[in-house]
Amino acid sequence: ILGAAGVPGPSHVLTIRRFLYGGGATVTTFRPTSPRWRPRVRLWLVLGLLLALLILAPFAADRLTRTRVTLDISGSVRQVYTHAGTVGEVIEDADVLIDAEDVIWPDPETPVEAGMTISVQKAYAVAVEADGQVQHVRTQNTHPLDILDERGIQTNAYDVIRVDGDDWSHEALDVQAFDMPPENIYVLRSAELTVVDGENTFTIHTTQSDVG
Image (cartoon, rainbow, N blue to C red):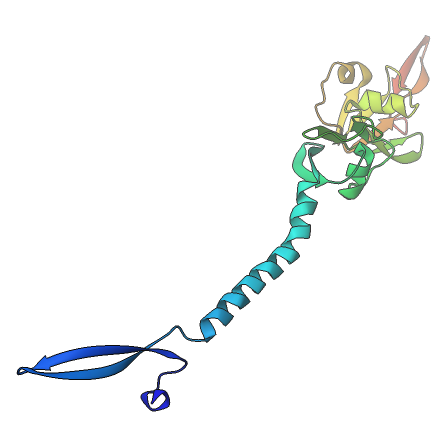
């Protein structure tokens, strides 16, 4: 009967009495129970949830055990979550290239603390030409005279210092402020010449390469 009725699985018998025109009749019907596939769906849902937890748990545990720090690279700020134990290891893990002239604060050996800020001030690249030699230097200084002094290049009051194409005397450059370093510094050396004009003799200083 169940197969003929198209009812899958076991059923409960339901008896209904109907009374028509004073007579009575008993009609027996069937009420289907829950399909067999529903418990299987629940089982697969539970197994899927457990599998997802097994996959995501290591990632969640990894994130929860990391320390959050702020990394400031020459004004470019980002948040970093790290397992590193020292400042130097944080910088290394973040793939920040460090040159000898760069400044790191705090010291690279400082232990990492949650919420700390790590600063790296990258050195500036400057091309310096003086006395026939060109040097490509990296420096934390911004003023041209400080950069020259750092390289051991001395200038006098008569030399001309060309900074990114503009010519400066030593005196004028000394009082000029520089928030950012120049890209190029060129020192034009002055030469001392003795000029004889009849009975008069005097000395001049020039950066010209010839007399004219």
